[in-house]
Length: 139
Image 1 (cartoon, helix red, strand yellow):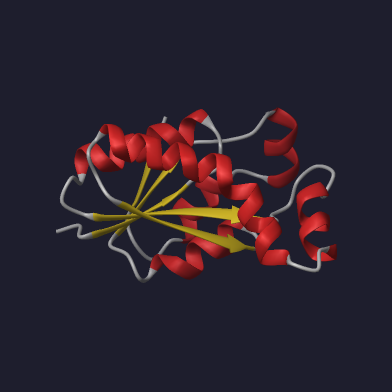
Image 2 (cartoon, one colour):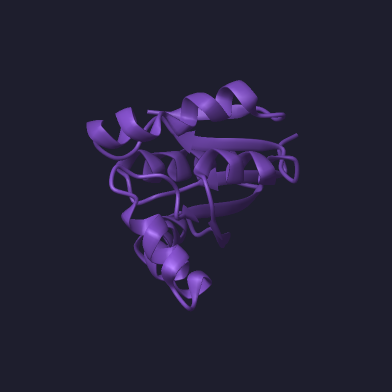
């Protein structure tokens, strides 16, 4: 039985679909939405801003606001409660570090534009290959 589900979420449409899927398929599970700030990007803007900030956690939280507000809105549509969390780091490593505390991961098939995917790589593909727990990829 899947009792605890991790849903990594950025501000992409696919991440929203993944959360909806998790809420529909695992209605009794504890859902944790994880936003990872400061990961690699084509120009390293977010990571640099966080690294140079006097309040890195505050800046990371600021970057997560839109995605987590969207997650809360989706949860409200399903009359569900979710837990939200913000971490700073590389998305794949951060997701995999959290994985063992959950029974499954549900994530979107991709996010960002073509340049970001080419530069950063596909988070979903790497999580699927390296995860110690089952992963569902939603398109």
